[in-house]
Image 1 (spheres, rainbow, N blue to C red):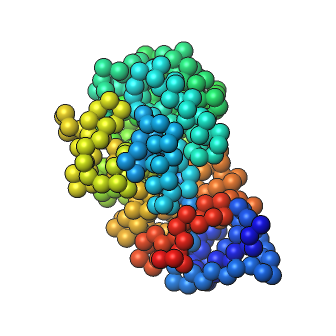
Image 2: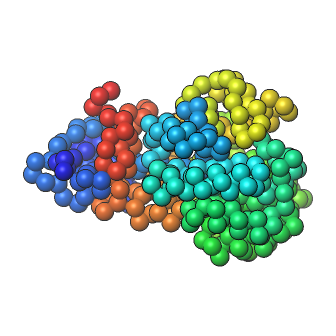
Length: 381
């Protein structure tokens, strides 16, 4: 085995707070509490060391799709996001034919079994045509619990989350089924009222899919789902912090009302993340990416993002003015807890996987470690 490493001199963000001139000891694939005498010392003075990022909601990157690509495509996208600090990623599907989704889930389940992805998120087809966003309306359907169960079974224990318009017929029963099977029921792409959203939460929903986006706006007479999702302590709200999906005031509103412990930063990335402008497919729909913003060719709806988590982190600190500890909670600890993986990832503690990100003083990424191996070596520049 390689000698242990001591990452020394950095500002290290721990669950208890930030330690100046701190150190993280890596022994094999894990964080350790003590270093061997022959440990390699890596001087990271002037830098930050934070936990590896965890992305609950991601459709691809590097020119490759999680939603419809081959296993090789998925691995290419995973590698792209790892280079941007996302050491744990859930692969998100988009609306499609039910049999195709089941087959594709089987392939993704094999990658999850190998540890390449953390699981599968089904976004569609059980969503509202009124709030379909970049989903093919012809393929949408009401959330029949039997069909929901079909997709869960096809994932062979690796279904982590499903986004539903819970106001549709069968929605509440589907939420209950997901909760019984240990799958996160997420409210999203929904036209639900405030009262209907509360019913979904009582049935077992625990996540808001990209809060504010693809749902009715907050109203003073008809508060809609946003108010219900923000105010309920049982809900974690996803936020896409790319400067396109959310105005900074909306992000601040979410943090103020939900608190840092109930926010999860996601990318909702599509193929163009980490790749560039051009024409792409998101499921069966054609997407034009221009100046880093993805929109459907037909209709112009925003179609996912080209965001990577390192950019979301930097924006949260430098533009939104959030405390670094709150950002770490939103981008690492909270999603790890939702996935039931916080015994292994999400914070820098002895015994956990050595998944971490090194940032410079300007919060630009300079290093990524996953399970004790450098993905991006900060010593190589």
